[in-house]
Every structure is written in structure tokens, then in C-alpha cells.
Length: 481
Ligand code: TAP
Image (tube, rainbow, N blue to C red; front, side):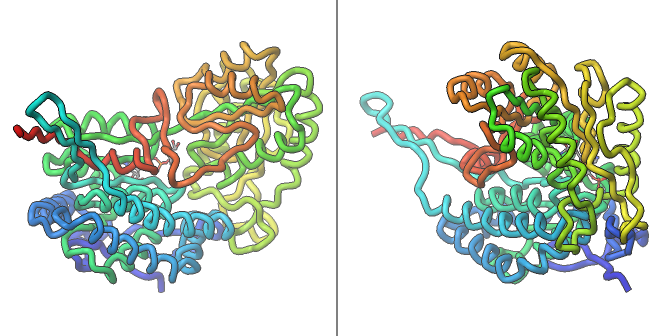
């Protein structure tokens, strides 16, 4: 029997008054692994009300940074004791490989450690403004933080928001994606075992249009932090206008990966594969557009396609799998539709393009690593975010053209340059209009570095000190000496 999940409100595990439950599937085989509640608008409002009054009580917000750090470290320790289970649950619910899920679980625990560490460093500024006036700049928590996360990194995206929001002294309401709530439940079970005061952290599962919308509209929510699609991000901004709450958005991307003639070919090919096929391409920062200079275009494409064909797709629990499942049937269909459109609009399908239903993948949602070559900037598969294992390779002549094509997009999340000429690489990467960039690498990052996008890829930054800022107010205190 699949476990019935519960909402976590005011420090208690409770059923929703809505009897309808959502089947939570393992996308590798469609096994029902849990049933999740679909909270109502009233239940979401109740959680927000409790979070607000817990914030105002000062039980958490008035604690010293060191006291808050102690609780964050307790959460980190609990997570570290349960890394295997967290990884296993993430793999089963999202469909990613166990290796990827293990890496996410370790990064999640580390995120709590990082923010605990940050709290141990005194921050703020003080200076003598004019002769008799001493000014202090201090940071304060905002109040209630609404945290809305997607399905592609259910654990890591939750923790990227929970850790800084709690570190700053806020109360939180977490809304996981409807189809991937399982690891969020585990995180709240662990939080429940720590000294975090009752009423500070709430987990409300349910649909975006009910739970998410209620959070975004509520006058009692002071900051909403959202990761997901650009379309929903736009809705959230509109919904937030009622009380002009602070909005932080991490949205989609269509990131360029620029490979110059003088790049180390093996390095460029391997990172360009990793750049799109990690997480089956369901990664906001994926390098889904590869731009290759004409001198090495044919050689690059030949090597790339050969290696892409060799990627072993399979269930996450098979150690030999290098690429896992697509998160849901609906999303798989949307990716297959893009592949159909790509062929129709004249892209050359160099490999992949189909669902895989053999070798133990009969019931799962698996798609072959798919490579389109000889694409042009006007094609839909080049302009729109597919969010799957589909990459488009395009040719360019020179530096100026590479930059022009790279920036010819409404997005600005990530980008990379491959060249052995460090000066050229730096010159070009500085011109790429994106928040997360690499030279001779892809996807490597760390908890200290700010994560977020330019243009329609979002507003604000996660992680690092920047991530803490998203959940803080800044106050000036002027002292008449
Ligand atoms: P969305 O459909 O945007 O969903 C994201 C979250 O928002 C889910 O929890 C969803 O709930 C909720 N939601 C849906 N409608 C809402 C509404 N009207 N008000 C408030 N919340 C609402 O995206 P997705 O399909 O989960 O994820 C894929 C997209 O997210 C891709 O475009 C990808 O690029 C982007 N993404 C970006 C990043 C970063 S870091 N930039 C990271 C991951 C994903 P339900 O699904 O439960 O209904």
C-alpha cells in the first residue's frame, strides 16, 4: 500500500479536508509510491495565519543568529544521517539516476551547513554620517516567506529556499510541485525532530492554482520565492501586487554553449553532453543550444553524436544508467511534441528522437538523447525551452556572430564558452547576457555563488550571501550622539 502523505501545519501532521488524493508515481515504472493530499485554499490560509502569528511571537525571529545557526546545523546533521533515504526517495519520485540524487542530497545538507556558518559571521555596517550622527545598517527578517518549488530538483530547490529563509529568521510555507512532494515530506519530518519552534515551518501540498496562487495573493505573505516556468512566474508577480510583497523568481532558460575552433575538443564535447543530458535535460541551466565555430563544426558534430548515442538510458536504480526518466507522461509528451516540431521545421535529427520502451523501460517515461544539427535561430526548438534531453547545434563564423546568436533569446540564465585562448574566452563570456556562466566547463557550481538569471530568466538570486538578502529587510538606524 502506498503511504498517504499528510500536510505539516503548526507542527502537526494533518489530513486535508479535501478527500481527493493525488497518486505520486515513480516515472521509471509508473508504480504508485505515495498518495498526496490536495490542500484547500482555507487550509493554505490557515497555515499562513499561523506562520504570521509565530513570526510575530518572536520565538524564532528574535533568536540570536547563533541560536538560529544551532537549529540549522541540527537540520543539516539529521539530513546527513538520512542521505541514503533522501537520495532513494528523490530518485523514485523524480526519475533521476541514483548518482544524481545522491549528489542533490549531499548538496542539500551542505546548504543548511553553509547558512548556519554564515550566521556565525557578524554582518551590517556602521559609520559616522555627519559630526553628531552615527548610522547603523542592519538586516531584519521579513515575516512570512512563501516558497514554491518545481519538480526537477524537488529536494534541492526546497532546501535552497528553506535554509536561507529560516536563517534570516522568517516563518515559511513550502509548496512542493504536486507530482514530487516526497522528499519535502522527509525534510519536514527531520525538521520536526529539531528545536525549530512550532508554527514556524509549514508544508502545504496541493495544486499551483490553489495553494500556490493563495500564497502569491496573500496579504499576510511578505516574500514569495518561486522557481518554475516563466509563464507562472509572470502570474506570481501579478498576484503579488495586492500587498506589494517582495518577489524572487528563478525561471526558465535556453542557454548557449559556445565552442570555438581552438577549444580542446574532447573537453568541449564531454561538457556539452553533460550540459544538456544531466537530469535528462530537465535542468533550468541546461546548455540546450550548442554554437560551434565553422572550422571544427563537422568534427565536433561527429564526435558529439557518436558519444550521445552511447549514453546509457535506464532506471535510476540501475547503477549503469547515465540518464534517467522524464518526470511525467505529460512532460514526456511535451518533449516528444517538440521533437516532432523540430523535424517539421527542418532541423536535422542526427540521433535519438523517440521514446524508449524496452530493456526494463516498458512502463517508464524514457526518451533517447536527441541531437538536432544545422538548426537556425528562427526555429521553435532553438527559441523555446524544451526542458528535456534535446539539444540544438548551430554553426557560427566568428566571435561577433557567436555573441549575437548567444544573446538572441528572451532568456538569460546560463551560458558557457570553450576556447584555449583565455583572453578571448573572458571577452566573450563577459558579453553573454546570463547570470550563471562557465569557461571550459558546464554545470559546475557551489553554494557560495549566486544563482539566477538575466532578462526573463528571473529576478533575484539564490545561494551565497545574495540568497540570504532575498529574505531580509534592510534598516538604517541613525543615532544622535
Ligand atoms: P511550473 O508549472 O511553473 O511549476 C512550478 C511550481 O509552481 C509548482 O509547484 C507549481 O504547482 C506551481 N504553480 C503552478 N501554477 C501556479 C500559480 N498559478 N501560482 C502559484 N504557483 C503555481 O514549472 P514546472 O513545470 O514545475 O517546472 C519546469 C519549469 O521550471 C521550466 O520552465 C524550468 O526552466 C523552470 N525551472 C527553473 C529553475 C531555475 S533555477 N531557474 C529551476 C527549476 C525549474 P503544481 O505543479 O503543483 O501545480
